[in-house]
Length: 155
Length: 103
Image: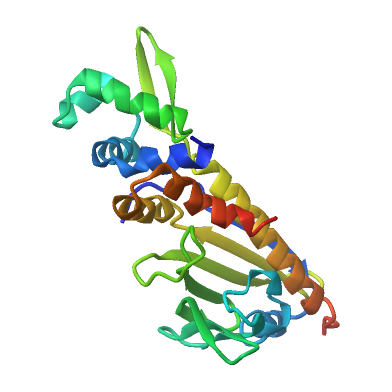
């Protein structure tokens, strides 16, 4: 694990739902809103499951019923906070030895709604895993493939 | 090599990762790095050049020396992609959460 923190990604959004409702939509209802363009399954994303406790699974269920892990739940503190381990590497493959953290905080907003703050950190670990992959790949095609596949998903 | 390729290649070399991690604990000159690592100054300079080209470190002049430090935005293209990805996901979440009336 590095001591370096390349700057984490931080995003904020304010929603009309109360913190409890916003938390439930985010966690229990993730399958309802998560963009299906990023499915890991061949049959396409049907839903996403976040088991609402520390150590819980975080996975996608395809339309064909197949399950694909995304990571796991590190902490679940309804309605204020959820901490998830995002374990899809730069090649968009689940890797149990790759871990970045996604923390989401739900704060009451002035009008009864919720301010949702998301932070994706430990991004240096993308570099660390790429180092080990290099030993296996050991070719420039492999290198451009690693982040190229990742970037291509945005197209 | 693409920009992404330079970043990954820069972090792949174990000595460069040592230098990168040492800079993570504080800004250093080349001489500082040579004192704390079992690597010659010319080799350190060469490694710093690679890290700089990958956008992972930057340097500022201090008298006749140059002081190196981590560029926290250094995993640039990856961060940019993730920034857009999470922005899109949160927008999709908001679309659903905004259907609720605040109580």
